[in-house]
Image 1 (cartoon, rainbow, N blue to C red):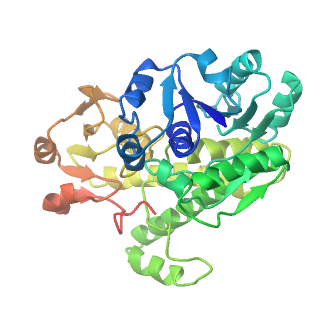
Image 2 (image 1 turned 90 degrees about the vertical axis):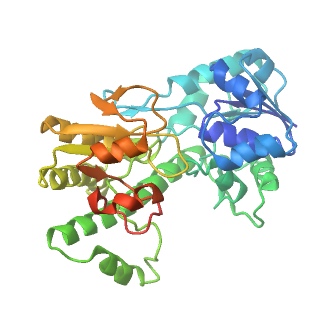
Image 3 (image 1 turned 135 degrees about the vertical axis):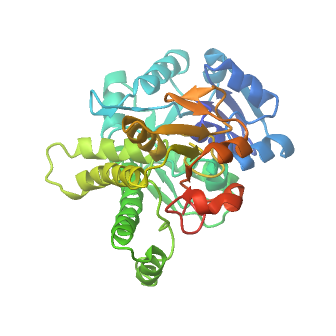
Length: 389
């Protein structure tokens, strides 16, 4: 069985590495630097498990920028290209997915195409009709940034958007390459699989928003957030997990997935989905106002990344907070090792952590790490446990 993967971000590369344990895999990307890095055994994204597997495991994996080589002999082709949310169209930009599908159909029309990019509800069936093919299904991913391969090795479930033997064969390929046993496999129709992805991520966003609003209330009334969350979470129906306050949800998935689900509700009565999206904006405004009220002279921003073990700060909550602070005329400096530029968002980037600490009047940190323990009295955070979950 030959597998190709189009796109080598978190989803694509983690699937390629997972399947390359037992199958011949070609990973395709238009970014030559990423391809060279993978072939040299160096992960182009920050993920400890991916790097360990590239270094230590026996993988039948070749990366290439040649789409003909990647697609022509493949039995299964996973499409994992980026689909950013377009605020002008109120929908995911699926142009990269469609472009790859067009290439595949031109090169190898018999290949079974599995879309793992996040897409609008109903997209796969529309695409099949427009491209006059039945060889496309959707299979959602449920991965954490920095833990993408781990979450493929120990998946919560595997879902495929077709109730067929070939779809179940693909699901079992993923399950057979995992470490976890007795993995739950669910076969649905494509549109239901698309809905599962968006509803699952929106529920996670709702949970983040809920505990953040709990924290906003506690902070406003000078109450102990930790005690309230501990008491609430003792209810087994709620559980003591995914309840650590933050500056807001962000990253690759939750912001765009909640917006897309809200857009899919265009002709459906709702209040809650809109509230999840609005709540995140409100939380960031609350955090910014709380910092501004302290009248700092220089605000130091410790890390832009979404969470530990990630190199991504796209749509990170701290970005909007920085913009609010700058709008108030505050001097903002940034410490972020993943930034190579001397400035970001019109803020100075300080490369040396010690210099950053000395220059900052107040340091804001979404998560409190050991790096800040020696200046904790100047750190502003809503973090209770250091955990992202």
